[in-house]
Length: 76
Image (cartoon, rainbow, N blue to C red):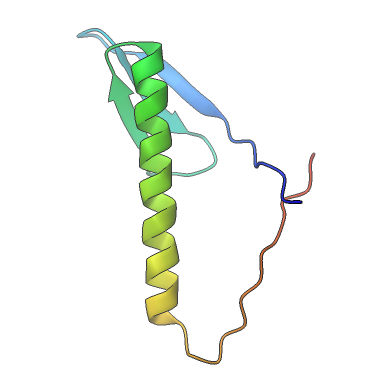
């Protein structure tokens, strides 16, 4: 059974209102929202898009002989 990976989301109040947010462990995954709830939802959408992009890119750049397997990040 694959456990969920836990990441650290940072929500910073924006001067114009709302929040800007990012994931500490994944540079470049960032978003914003008018409320914490909206920012959280948008950040999860950004993470999903980033993972899909990286997945697609890795498949395009790897050889047909590549071996793929699921790995689990151990709890710390």
